[in-house]
Amino acid sequence: MARKLAYWISTALVAVALLGSLTYLTGSEQVVSGFAKAGYPQHLRIVLGVMKPAAAVVLLVPGVPLMKEWAYAGVTFALVMAFISAYLGADPVWPMPLVLLALLIVSYVTRPANRRLSPVPASA
Picture 1: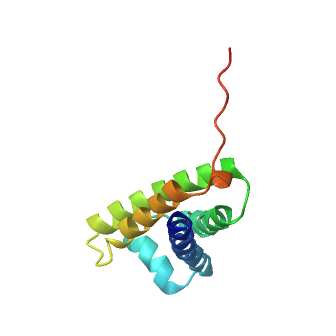
Picture 2: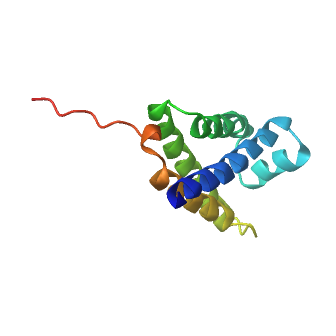
């Protein structure tokens, strides 16, 4: 029961954070200037604004274990890069990507068997 609770709490918190990336698509002054300040091109804002919420959906829905593996990997890369960018840019919220990464790791480790990719049988 504790494992299941840890999975759902961590996964839900990560998913909510990822869904918040939909604001990247608004083109608001704050978002555009944040990406510019970090030195990122604006097309990255669009890509992340689509892919992060898509990853959130994949992590939440049942089935699609291969897509879940890709979502976990992609979100891991995005959070590591967000941490590096925030830390080097002296952003006061630089620990937040690490917190989300820790939650993502908890989600990955505690996920139920039906949300895991089945091992490929060894060929003879």
